[in-house]
Image 1 (cartoon, rainbow, N blue to C red):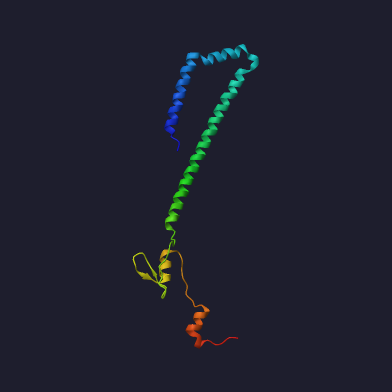
Image 2 (image 1 turned 60 degrees about the vertical axis):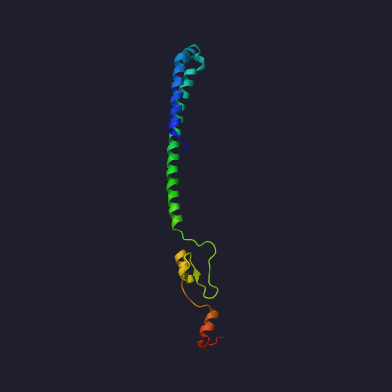
Length: 148
């Protein structure tokens, strides 16, 4: 993360150093003098163009900074939404201890639950009951009419 306070202090230090050096060496006066002596070089127009480019660059950088800050806020919001969604997700992991006979599942507290009850409380699964063809034959075979 960028520390804006340090950046501002650095920019202030550069501005102070530039001010001192420009005053010490009369940079602008020397440049104006040189520009007048060599009018054919169009130095004053070049300086004007450079100043306009600096202002344009400052405007573009400011717009980019605002865009990046908005993007950061959007990402932070989306991250909070995803963290909330992750907390809501129920997921089964690991090995489930299941009775080899009745197929009940033992929970972390040592209690045994029907498969449907356990899975419903640990996931978003819902159950609907029915009978497979082999169980129908086994349980109700005497009542079934033989089909060709």
